[in-house]
Length: 415
Image (cartoon, rainbow, N blue to C red; front, side, top):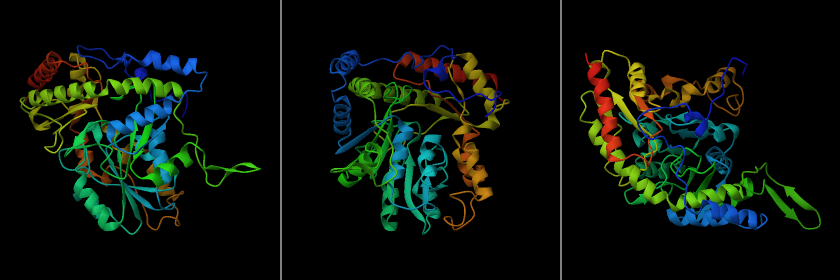
């Protein structure tokens, strides 16, 4: 990085410049008990256990045995990667339309990401795109529920069982989304969640891993909370594995616990408004909302997205998105950077140079990364417009205004 380059921004800072006629998530609506929980942290002199209380509450909300709190979503997924069975050079099949946080832990553990293509017409992978990628080096499948839409997990789990693979979920955008009566994050052996300030369960920051497996939960706490350290009588700490200090703070736990208490009503509102807006948008010729699968009873929509039939419009997709933002939809824009095989430029640089973990060994073949890895996903994102300012503040009037704006821009640019 040099002085002419601009660092990426996150949270409120990333949205501070946005203007428009529709709600912005910030300032966030805070749970009414936030201040009292924070006061508990102070009054206890840091002896309280808000982290444990949050972990128990979130586990109960999902109906799982274990919740292991972390400082954020990227650390949560990194901790899961550290706990996976396997060695450097082993392969993990992962969704291509996602965020860097999905990938970071895998790469740092020396695993090689293999990107499955997206299913046609959507942002998620499916069993048909995953199956051809399984090799004797495959150890796990990481499914991302992008925008809050849940992957079709039953066929993926059946495929994984036949090959003895570990299936886990990136549910960072899908808190309380449901799939055939089950909650996202309970559909594999483990899952990572995000509580960053812009997310549906928006705290100051934060994340967690959930699982029903006792041994896995203990390993996550050993690696992530105890830094791979054991207590040896008469000596002190002995670090038997290279662990991490990925502990959620008490103050973050206090805020996140308060936000959890208002989460169900917020998710219900997001679900209602996303489904209404989907119906309204799909009435506009040449425009299609992301399809909500029939198997998904609750859509915890974090990001609303549309695709364009480019042949029906005289302008390009980027221009269409700019016009939406100018007309009043804050943050409307293309999401080309979500194509991680292309956006993470270091992947191909390392692969071409045969740098670890692409050196041979531990790798046993040549890898390359770019849009050619996942052509369906790449083509989809060239027609995709999204805005991550969609939130529980939307009302029916906001949905109708959004559809009117999209319809007006569409009519102004029709061939």
